Amino acid sequence: MLPVNPDRFLADLHKLRSFGASGVGKGVVRQAFSDPDIEARKWLAEQYRDTGLTAHFDLVGSVWGLAEGKSLLVGSHSDTQPEGGWLDGALGVICGLELARAGAEAGLPVSAVSFQDEEGRFGVTTGSRVWGGFTSLEEADALTDTAGHTFADSRARMADLTGDFVDPKRFSGFIECHIEQGPWLDKNNEAAGIVSSIVGIRDMRITFHGEQNHAGTTPMHLRKDALRGFMSFQEKINDRFRNVVTRETVWTNGHMELYPGSHSIVPGRCTFSMQWRDGDKARLDRMEEIIRDSAEETAAEIGLRVEYSGMLGLNPVPMDDGFQAALGRGAEAVAPGRWRKMPSGALHDAASVAAHMPVAMLFVPSINGISHAFEEDTAEDDLVVGLQILAHAVQDILS
Picture 1 (cartoon, rainbow, N blue to C red):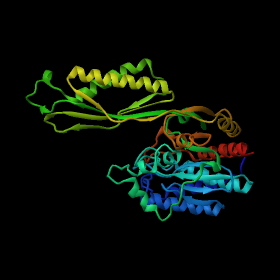
Picture 2 (spheres, rainbow, N blue to C red; picture 1 turned 135 degrees about the vertical axis):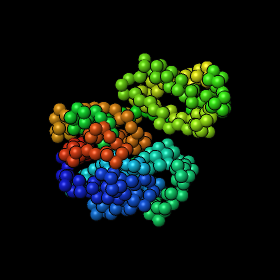
Picture 3 (cartoon, one colour; picture 1 turned 120 degrees about the horizontal axis):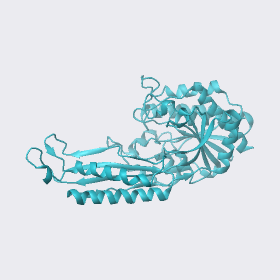
């Protein structure tokens, strides 16, 4: 096992939490390119330099600690949701820092990274997707946040720090440690999850166009109510998915807009998000068929018109078998019998990095399965177990 220092590791995690600390529990507000985010990245660069790594900011604001020659890359992201937890992404970043230190002591080359805008202020895992070649810098620059700020203008705040993109050929692989962000490890008193694959995601907006009219004088049987269309659509897909999905499949309507949004007006337009996730591409495609068929049928029944946005389509990404095996040996050494293999239902930077190199992920428990909230937490003993599993696996891989 690489000679990691748990006390130093935990101290660095808490130091990173101080950048953007919300004052509510251990919560953090550190969105991409905010002042706390930039200050945190500068602090990380200092730690990388003190470790003997070359600190480097790339064009999208990801910060790297680069070992000499070919190395194994370990990291995640340090930006947060608007109301974020202290461990989402940050855990993997500090694992990278501590493993780079331990690697330097042991004479094994480990590099570290914190990717920018994983949490999607502007896009989806924006920094790693640009580096992975899925999104061009020009396309990323045109993205806007909810306040209308562009990615281009926001990354310009770091222009004095940044240089070219890092050549992916300098890395032999990538490992990302992350909190599970779900209930399974915590509920089963398990110490770790070795990720088998990152699920695929489909995400689009659907709009039902109806007829705006007076709420008091329009008879129910004559209404072309766009909200009624949404409700009927929901019933259809929930019924039709039953024979298609598994217990790991999820689908969500996380956002909806009604127009014009008045108590006394029958809604003339209803736009809502439609997202679904699964580890099997064929199942994702079948769900899309059901979604589109159900929307068309609903529109015909009520007298609506249906419109679709473009669709974000990310296919499932399998983790490297050899890296999974190394993590498994590490888990059995540190927490025998208290680990499992599992898919990741959340998207992570590893999915983008897989375009360039073998990747793997390790999960540690999330207390009560809570994440993307100030209440997010993990027992410190479990954090250390995760670090120690990685220390075994990284030495195994590099030796």
